[in-house]
Image 1: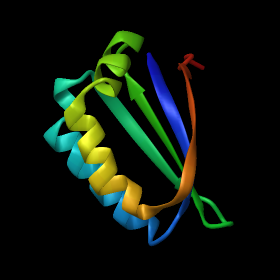
Image 2: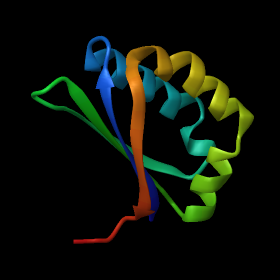
Image 3: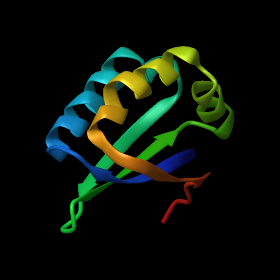
Image 4: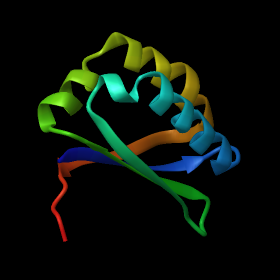
Length: 94
């Protein structure tokens, strides 16, 4: 499994970010090798979003998809204060 973690300061309620992510998963997720997503609201007003995909290839294919870029710019960026931090990598089983 491969994926990404986004750490960002949120402008509004984290619930709105979670709601938009859930909508994305229903609309696009199954078409792109999406497995699951976890959202954490931190005590200091940030959120941590962890997303897993079937493979690195599936993740990179989504990252290069113009539809994904449009969705991120119109749905997520308005909810984020500043530039988020992204951490990509292989998810290891525990």
